[in-house]
Image (cartoon, rainbow, N blue to C red):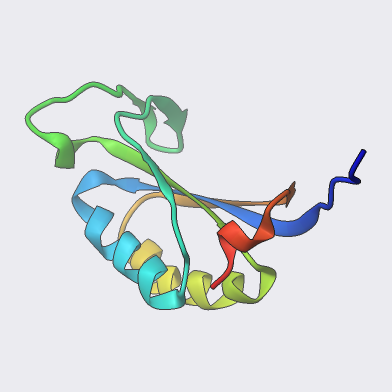
Length: 108
């Protein structure tokens, strides 16, 4: 039986308003991120109270989460790109250490 190899990487969970999705995905693309997952219509409670995750008028009026798995060296450039955005807009980034198989899927 073959031994499974794991690679340690970072998982970024970027939460922001759907109207800013293109900004965040452009930033990830320009940083060299090879892929990401977008989850729409988030619900939750934060500093500004409870946010209902249903479509109000269009997909830009809801919170989204963009999940990206990246090598550690991409974390700082991505966070530097998001820092000015988050000084003007609400949202948050969660960063976790995770392990993946098939690291080739997450690197260029």
